[in-house]
Image (cartoon, rainbow over the protein chains, first blue to last red):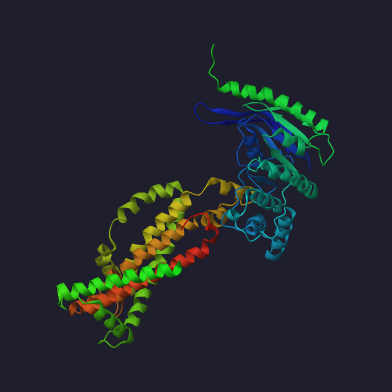
Length: 257
Length: 260
C-alpha cells in the first residue's frame, strides 16, 4: 500500500483538517504500527485505507490501484469489534466466506480453522453477547482473517482489554501474524504495544497529521519488554510523541496574546 | 415459581368469573341482558360440539382464522416491503409519510362500505378490513428498525466484502431490524385479530366467530354472544403466545441483551 500527500478535511464550521500531507508505505507481510497523539487522525487514516472514507486530496493506492471503496482485500478490525450480534461466532466468521460463495462445507471447515487459530474452539456456537471482551476480540480477528485479506487494518484492537489480557493478546497477535504472514496495519495509542508488535512504527504529528517519523524496530521476537534495547526504543518513540502531544494540547488552549 | 404464577393466574380468573356470576344473580337477573358464566361455559361446550341449534364453533374458528390469515399475511408482506423501502430511502419516506399518516387514523370499520362495494361480500373483503388493521404496526416498526440500524454494522459488512446494496440489505439490514419487525408483526397481529369481528359483521360467509356474534344478536342469545366473545379472546391470546414463541426462537441471539 502506498499513500502520498493524503489530505482529509471534514466539512463543518470550522472545517477540521484531520490529515495533511501523509506519506506512507506499507510493505508486504509487515506489521506496521501507527501511533500518534489522541485525536490526531489515526483512525481517519485507517478508514481511508479501508475505503470507508474518501480522501480530500492526495492518493491512497493498494497494489498500485487507487482505493475507491471497501473491499475484502483490506479488512478492518474495529475498535469495538462490531461483531454481528445476530450471528454466532461461527456465523460471524462465515460472513465473508458466504459472500465469496464458498460452498457451505468448505466454508465451515475454513471458518473453524480460523476459530481454532484464535483459540475460540468450543465457542463457535456462542453469540457475541455471551463472550468476554477478549473473546470478542478474537472472534473479530477470526472473522477478518477468514476473508483472507491482503492487508488487515486494525483500529486500536486491544484497547478495550484489561492489562493482563492485553499483553497476552499482543503475544497471540504476533503468533497469529507469524502463522498467517498477513500484512497488518495497526493503530494504537500505546507506544509499548507498538514497540512490542511492530516491524516499523509510524509516528504521526498532532492534527493535522502527517508522518513525523518512521522508526524501525530491529528487535528479535519474542521481544522482551524489559530488555534495555526495548526500553530505549520505547523512550525514543515516547519522546517524539510527547512533543506532538504538547502541540495537540496547546491547540485547545485559548491564545493569550 | 412457574407453579406460583399459574396459581395466581387461576385465582385471578376464578375471582373474575365469580364476580360476574354474582353480578348476574344479584343485580341483572335477566337472560335478555346478560348471561352468567355458568351458562356461558355450558353454551360454549355445546357450541364446540355442535349441540346448540345450527351453530358449530369449530367451523367458525376455521373461517375466522382463514380470514385472519388472508388479511394479515398480506399486511405482513405489504407492511414489511413499504417499511423496508421507507426505512432505507429518505425520499421514499418523505413521499409516503403524508399518505401513511392520512390513512392510518381511519379506523378499519370505516373501510367496510368501500370494501363491500369494491370486493363484494367475499373473503377478500373481510381480509381487506383485517389487512387495514394489521398493516400499519408492521410497516411503522419495520421502518423504524431499518432506519435506526447502526452504521458500524454496515461498515463492518462492507469491509468484509458486502459491497452490493442488496447483499447489505439482506445480510445486515434485515437481521439487524428483525427485533423491531417482530414487534410490529406481533402488535399488528393483535390489531388484525380484533378486526376479524368487524370484517365478518357484514356477512361475507355463513361462518365466522364475528359473524355468529351478529347472528346471535338477532335472537338475543346472550350466552352465545358471550361464548363467541370468549372464543375470540382465547384465540387472540393463543396467537400472541405463538408469535412470542416464534420471536423467542428467531431472536435467540438477543437473550441476555434485553430483559423480557
